[in-house]
Image (cartoon, rainbow over all chains, first blue to last red; front, side, top):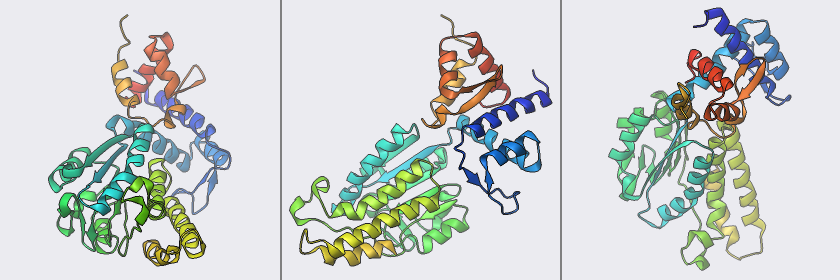
Length: 272
Length: 63
């Protein structure tokens, strides 16, 4: 068994090598860096001299590496499919499931009738997913699942503590989002108003063929894919909003189909 | 061929590691940085280095 200071040296070596793999333009502000952003080389310097910041970086990196043992990167999807709108969300979230799996993340998919309160709550309690994606109808205080059964409401919002939650559900960003934060959720991303989806009348209600719905749902997928790839929440939201803005611009100006400008206000409603 | 002691623990943790992270350094042996992927190969092939890697990862409580 190695001495404590010997282990410390090994930890230091590992962290320095990991920092060397970081792109040179990487910069980060830590709580102890007095509001200053530090570059990769500055971070390496701090680790080498074992300063307070250096110790902090070693701890952050090692805790991260130890986290895999606990199977920490777990993503839960709740995907009802009981009506036309849910069918669209169900279809679009398929690619997110594949992405999550291809990134090697532990991916739990509860779909159709399994997207219910008991199954989803039990999974959240037992698996403690880091990221929870809800498709569903919703309101200021609720997120629903299969056949509109309420999965999360004010009474059990504490379930979301310690997780990042994205609710593709109407209005849940208003009250429920705040309550989730108060009860310990790391982040709650939701919509303040109704989430709208336009539908192409020529698509025969097939999400795959729908040229209008994609403008409503791709920004949402972009947001989730950024989160799955480990981007920070702010960046994920910014990218999704930029994509929405592009689509609003497209609807407002395109001559591809005459009803296009009429979709723009609804997409703007999602954007707000 | 008998597998290295602790290799099962490594494989279990490795399966939880995202693909991009697997390219990053997990351990340094004899001044050489070893990624998760390289560690996997060494451990899978029962090498001396694989043995060393497992010992360090155990001591650091990574596996």
